Image (cartoon, rainbow, N blue to C red):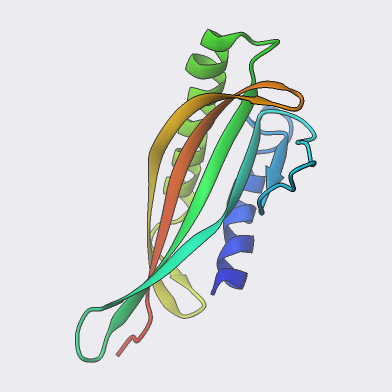
Length: 147
């Protein structure tokens, strides 16, 4: 199912790139140690876990967890603008886009629910400068044995 969910998540995030959109780069995998992001603001996401839950004697569900990192540079924008305008607006856009496009429909024959929650927001010193990062936790739950 990860092979279905990763492109589905990327397709949603890709709609937030281009003219007038908040992002310039979307990465659907962790970055290599020596790899740099092409342009900011950027999103990096990847899977981190899957869990299984028994609901009834004929139904169960699986939850697929992803980390989503929304990042922007700080050197040019400044810390206040990076956090309070660029990062805050980009995170709002990601949340709104998932609300608009993932309405609890069906993926590959499975009923889908999702939850997108904010994690830590922080500054990091990277190879190409200071970055403001917001960490999001995306949980996608699928009913796997529909009767």
